[in-house]
Image 1 (tube, rainbow, N blue to C red):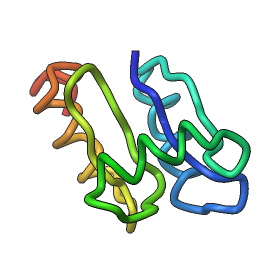
Image 2: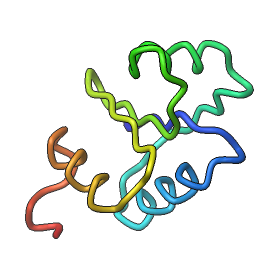
Image 3: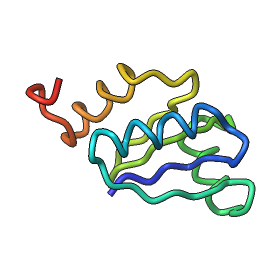
Amino acid sequence: MVTVYSTSWCGDCRAAKQALRMLGIPFTEVDIDQDPLGEQVVLEANQGRRSVPTLIYGDHAASMSRFSVVKLRIWLREVGLLSEAAD
């Protein structure tokens, strides 16, 4: 399952979660303002940057800052969660 590391105030986070829902991709959410361990995961995944939303699936992580559905779809295909046929 995809984990979305986000904050409550982040518009890109809301957009990413909505797009995941529309694509039928299940996810869990971690609010890094409320979870210091989640914040640490984000910092490690993004070379010390507190970049949200950050999506993690298995060993794959990606910052979706400056969110776009195209960027999300590319990442989902790379990690094997979306087929070319879904486009």
